[in-house]
Structure formats: structure tokens, C-alpha cells
Image (cartoon, rainbow, N blue to C red; front, side, top):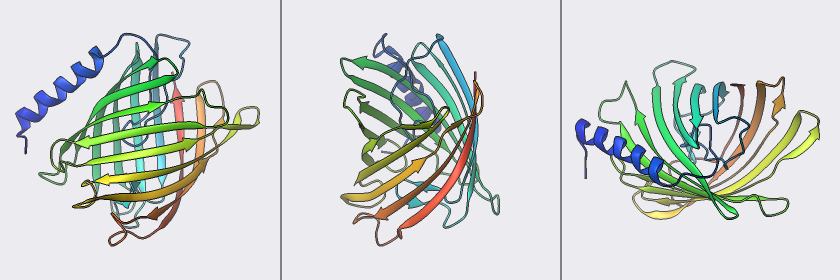
Length: 252
């Protein structure tokens, strides 16, 4: 089923209303939800905002090298209040500059016993590619009640241009090295539901680690490195890849 621009707008507004009305308790998520859903965290204030800028040596998205070897520059701005997050993410090709992507996202997060739940909607906009714009719904479940490890299950479903889904199971952990510096490794496996392929099959296995460095109360720098092994769903179009990058975040 394909949506015209008016239908897309109506679905987007309906999605925002749905996730906003789901619950009135819990805590909020931040960051670009479509790239990485994170567990809700307790905020000292009823609102929180952040602005980040990043560089990635490859644009790896759900196991696929989107830019065929070119690097990516990104900017992400989001605002959270009462567990409801609105944000905008912009990325462009650091080489030729021919690729531009703007993602608008909204999410809501709440707690259900030991499990933190978030859900939302994402609109992908491609100014240089007519007909590529699309809309996606997502949900995520995670818990920090297991000692030494944080499991997260995320599900995404494109309801417009792709009409396919993507499932991801991730294990992560944060270790404090010294004050204001931590080591955050993770491992994940994903399953493709006609999102990257025309069938349903295992998508990729990925491992990585970041090194968040808190420079001040409101500024943090986070370099990272990652490696992805392509599985059956994408191994005919995608090689295994090693890449890295860094991000600086200003929090308010």
C-alpha cells in the first residue's frame, strides 16, 4: 500500500498522538530513535535537550553500507519533556555532498515493572531522491535489572515505501574506566522481514564499542568502532565491514 503526501502527514500525526497517549508514567529516551533505541534514563529535570554532531567513516544502517564506502556527517537535535521526545536528524555525504537525509522522529517511553518500553514514529525525508520518502513505526523493550548486561529488543516496521520490518536483539554494558570516562561494548544480531531483501532471514551480526568522555557537565565526546558480519539476507549485496567515528554532544 502506497501513501500520498496527505496520507503520510495524517499517519505521522496519528502516530505521534498514539505514542503520546499510550502512558503517563516512566522516563524518556533521547538520541536518534531510528539509529539506536536507548533505555529510558532518569532525568533530574522535567525536560532535557541535546545537540550533537558526528562523523562516521561509513554510513552503516541496519547492516548496509548506504553510501558505498563514503563517510557521513550528522547533526541531531532533540527535546524531551514528560517522557515524550521530538527530534530531527540530518546527515550528508562527507565526500561529494550528493546525499542528503532528514529524519524527523517522535517517541514515548514508560516503565512496566522491570521493563522499560518505548515506541514511536519516524519520517525519512530524502530531498534529492523523489519518491524515496517513507514512514516507520518502532517499539523497544529493555531492562537494566540483569547484573552485568543490558538486553534490548527492538522492532521496526516501514509502512510506506519499503513495507518491511527489521528486528534487533542487542546486549550492551557500560564500564567506568576512570572518572568521566567509560567503555561501552555491545553485540547485536538482527533479522530481516523483507526490509533489506525480498525474503525473511537473518540480517547481520554486529559488535562494537564506544568510549564516552565527559568533558564537562554539558559536553561529552564519544569515539567508537564497530564491525558487521553480513548474514543470509544481505550477504549477496553487502560485504563485512569495519568502521568508526566520533560524536560530540551538548546537553541542556
